[in-house]
Amino acid sequence: MTDGSQITVTITEPNQKVFISGLKNSFVFVINKCTKITVEKSEGAGIIFDDVIATVEVVNSKKIQLQANGVIPAIQLDFTHGATIFLQTDPGLDVKIVTSQCSGLNVVIPGAREEDDNIESPLPEQFETKYNKEKEKWHSAPSQHSGV
Image (cartoon, rainbow, N blue to C red):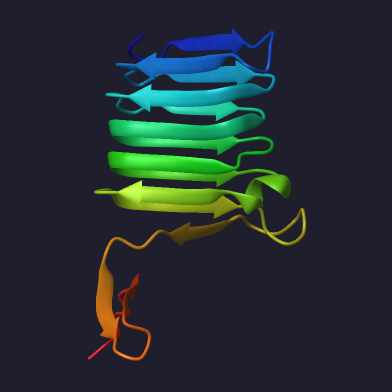
């Protein structure tokens, strides 16, 4: 599908999975609860979905928008550049987001009250790793950038 197309996928059984490949400048609406959604090699795509039992995975994609309208335990992004994740419900805020070799990622959540603006937050791209001698373990945390 390319250039402005819209498709609706209606899930009839929760154990069904959705696989999307090569989507360009189009939208996919996934209606009802499914096990997993995978998006690969897509650009300028929007995926809007209800509940997902396991994960939404995006691989080798650019300019992606994900909109979670329900429960989503995990979102995994690999080799993805320019993605915005909209978490529309309170249960959606419990998501775990895992990223690998990604850039330009943002998460948008509703404001505290209905009349408040949405809150957009970038996901870190750069990390610092230090060795803790006492615990004999490595620890990584997002880099803190401050003005000079």
